[in-house]
Length: 219
Ligand code: ATP
Image (cartoon, rainbow, N blue to C red; front, side):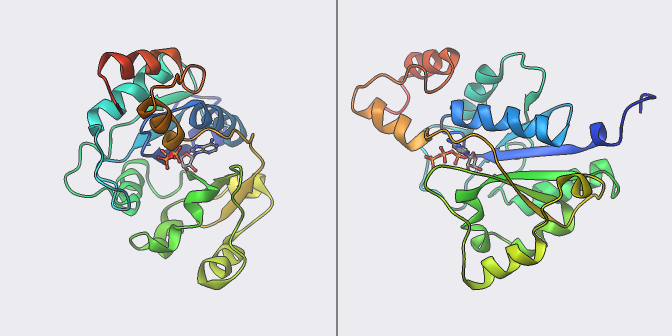
């Protein structure tokens, strides 16, 4: 470890998704989360075989290529293929265990999820153990709200803390809801536009638009 680095700069932040395709909603939130969490880089992790999604027409490798093209040389973001290197369905708990084994028990590990994803968290493999390995950092998204009733709502209330600075001083165990920008862009909308023959310019970086056109994706 280099001398003079603050504790926060050692933290690791992950932002998983299908990224089918990646868009400016993902990228803008990723930058804001990297700044908020004060991490050197935020690792964007495409999932391999999404257990909750329909079979995808675009390969994991193509989603990864689009993510790399979108990020380009941005200093705060990296594309991490950790889930593509594993066989079988990509369970987040396995990714967290793998990363925790690499970084040790003391380093703060943040898993960033959109509020839409949080709302389905109780369908995830070993979901209540996620906070054994990391903090959950929840970003806003238009038209989604925190659940108000049920087991998931109770679990969120138990783990939720409002002081991000306190959370950054510990390695795992808490949930923080942050106030990031609201951009009404989704991959579903991008795929629908392409299938209708409409333009997707300015919804995702030009490099991604070009990749999609060259490979005739989502047509
Ligand atoms: P789809 O439309 O196919 O469901 P998506 O646009 O929701 O895709 P995902 O790859 O499923 O994209 O999302 C990955 C992560 O990014 C999730 O945590 C999701 O909440 C978040 N996210 C996606 N779009 C936005 C957005 N516009 N604003 C904030 N967060 C977003």
